[in-house]
Image (cartoon, rainbow, N blue to C red):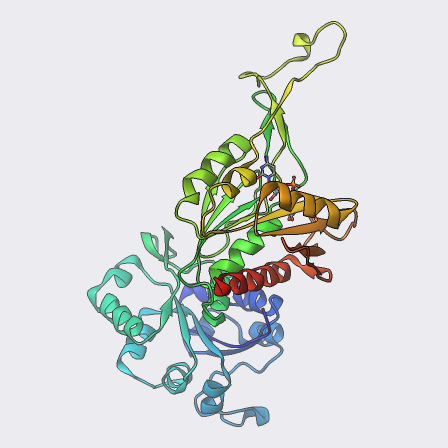
Length: 401
Ligand code: PMT
């Protein structure tokens, strides 16, 4: 997404040690970040580290207005497009709920008109205390968003809810807060990754799909407010923020998962590289060299897998269904044949003859191939950029209906 201005407010809990990682994650995503600390936060994280990572003076004192000619606390409140409080202590939540402004962070929070996202972190009993839960309810009723806390082992020795969400998750939630909810009300089903077709207990036939393209689509759809289910093939990628994941490592498992989720979906995007064939009779134990015939040749009988995309297109009704096509030559003609054969609303064709596009890499060069023979060629983009362009087209298509 475009670069945005994010104020990272850090309050005094042990989870503040993760603030530099969060700052880096936001900067890596291209955002401009300024940091404001409470005096207690300084005990857990060094302002110098934050200053080096943000490239900006770290704001710590309510009365240091004009420091190095910089903007004052009201200016800071006005500058921010999002105020992200991470970690947010129980004390800070209480101050926010009751309008206290006795330090820089709480004053900025009272003064800002920007959306606010908090990432609480505290002891499990402090979190579940009725005072904290009432404060949270007050903050939510005023439009403050909350990410976490997560359950787990806490620094204080207790187990339970109280851990701050991890920095990558908070960064994704911050971006989602800044993204217009143009897909609200849509239920998007995405497939991603390759399939692994079993030969025996340990071996599979698979392909080079990493899942990056489909995961980027799922992440962008979730940012835009859709309810997203991601049917993931053989991939070890982490589930994007706001996405429900169903693992389906083989073509048959993927068919079952897609059909189970299809009924509820309004948009289906099939970026998975599904194997066209699978071994007919996989062994339920490990094949050993001694099992090989004397010829030393092992022959595998392959049978055709069901074509999931063609199958759902036959029953798609008012749903929008998009297929992908990985092509190494005659890209447009091959994609047009696939579109006609399968009957989907759009084919996204990748040119996989290029080293810098398609399987495994972070970028993709795609063409949108439409049923009316129109073809749109996009430049080489990050897969997140391809995902955004694709969802823009799908939104227009659905608006026309
Ligand atoms: O995962 P990455 O490393 O990021 O790489 C992304 C990608 C190159 C895998 C992706 O962008 C892509 O092109 N996916 C589709 C690849 C493919 O195998 O296309 P296909 O031409 O075999 O299949 C066409 C369409 O039919 C696809 O939408 C596929 O999901 C679907 N299909 C194919 C076979 C089958 N048995 N069932 C299907 O549903």
